[in-house]
Length: 137
Image 1 (cartoon, one colour):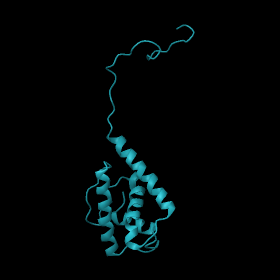
Image 2: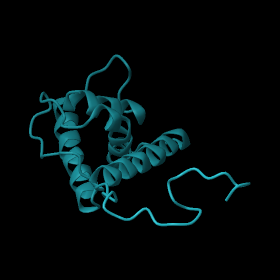
Image 3: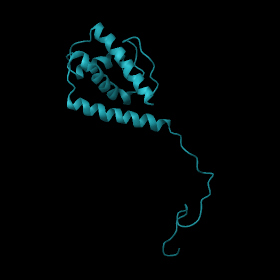
Image 4: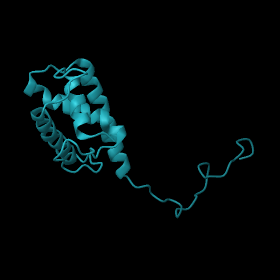
């Protein structure tokens, strides 16, 4: 799991606000943490929840599973771009779309419960669970 600041800096790099060797300023960090909280709360309203809770410090570990970081970072990049007059590249848009869809699918599928059907009768005919020889019936 990454620190909040690492996610914020990756997002700023994705939209070319800071270079690979630069660090985010205190103001960029504060804005980034606020936007990160806003994005994640908006996702919660859309039933995408993987344990996020509001963050106050950039030095804290982000409560984001590793598999969701790329989507969260891309969404944060897009959310921060207007403030910095940055243009979101087509590639970043594609990454954001596909990653966010994966996060939504995984979030929904993890909430589903398996149905126990072992109490149902097997039934009869050709759809039961016994193998039948099609030549012998």
